Length: 207
Image 1: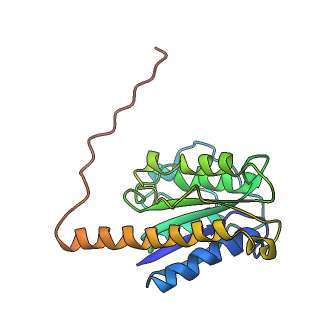
Image 2: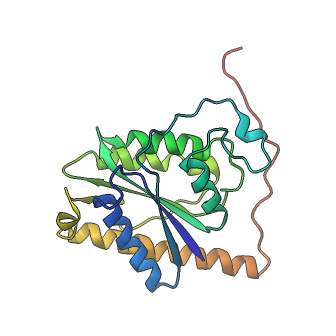
């Protein structure tokens, strides 16, 4: 079993990286492999709603950057966790553009457990946490819970280590992710298959 951890911070080894590292360490104790993926510091184009990705065999975006790289990594992952710093009570702008394109037109994400982690110096975590979580149910992905909202505080990795409750929340998230992955695997081995979706219906409210 493997979980992809996506770092949506412009700082590759900052506080968001440290928070995801706590999750990765605990997942390792649970026997789950992890891969940390940084979205990079180059500008990330927003989704153009072309929709070229939906017409391609592997649903890849027409623009070649870290979004497609992450989608390639996601093929070998059983779950995913997105981490973000808080910018104006929301996820980072780069991660927002990244996730818009990561999820648009994708068909291979359903039933893979997902979670969000929001890191702030002072506040705004809930807005960012809520924003990221909206991508998962629309993609058919179970949301992994913890003992509280997945928010932690710290201006830098050193301060993060002082948020004892936040660190416990991250460890609990990792344990719950590992448990959910094991349950899904046990179901698969027992012959339980995911529900077959109905043909997709769309209703426009302006006629």
